[in-house]
Image (cartoon, rainbow, N blue to C red; front, side, top):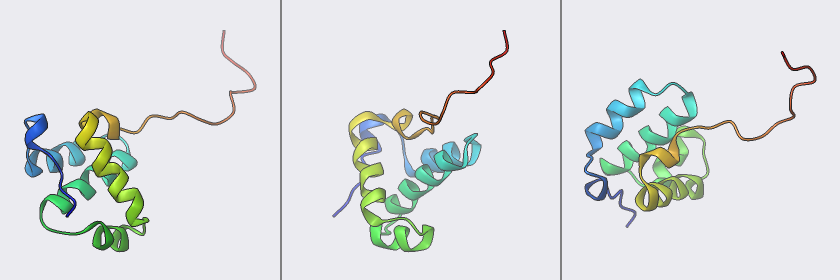
Length: 88
């Protein structure tokens, strides 16, 4: 059974929900709400179906959180092309 290890990070499902609701980026909100739903008894398959995400993706979020904590789920823009013109 998939388990979100909130205790390991001195957190709870309600803290995950609060962090999700105040997150600046939609992807961060989605990830934290998925963990919240799993804490409250849903499976990765159920959450994946509701969010139209692959259950493997949901499980990956849980595993990443369990290993590294909440910060690893915060969205960071990491790709894309650099701007053609830069302000100097």
